[in-house]
Length: 196
Image 1: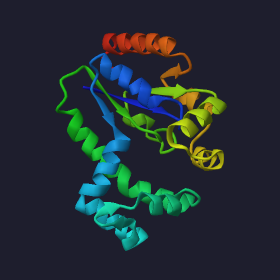
Image 2: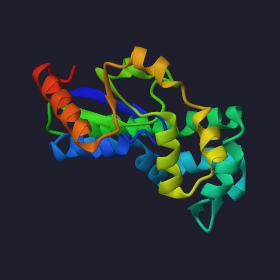
Image 3: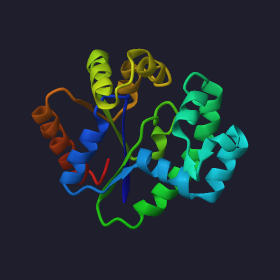
Image 4: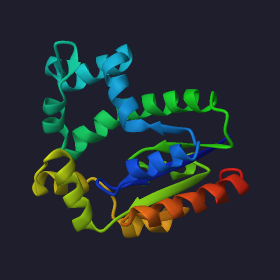
């Protein structure tokens, strides 16, 4: 079982690409979704978050996302501390999930592979890129965020130029059909090379 990381900056379209791999029958693990689930359901994770951010981190037994966002997005140190709680829990869950899959390789869709120096954890890493203006527009359309808020989030991610040098495969996600063809080609290569 080979582990493949799928990453890309905010608005690059990595979720779209992940869905294309899933449509080809590749098991895909959505780290963002699982992180949110673990932040709600894992007693250990919840306890650590409350110790770090206080009782306001949860409201009526639910994660207080707005409060947490305000605590971390302009504070690199607090973001690091939150990631240090959530990322190991997600990684452990991903590995437990991966061994149950019946496929030559699995994909973990996750945002900060290179930022967290996690590329060596995978057999291969696929990077999804798009021009910054395109990414800004996509995120504004998707969740109504302001340009300033999106740029603040982008600041915590490495530049595409840095990431391209570290990635095994790069998909420029602009035209959906071209992206599909690229996904198909990468899937074939990974199957031929047993996930490398």
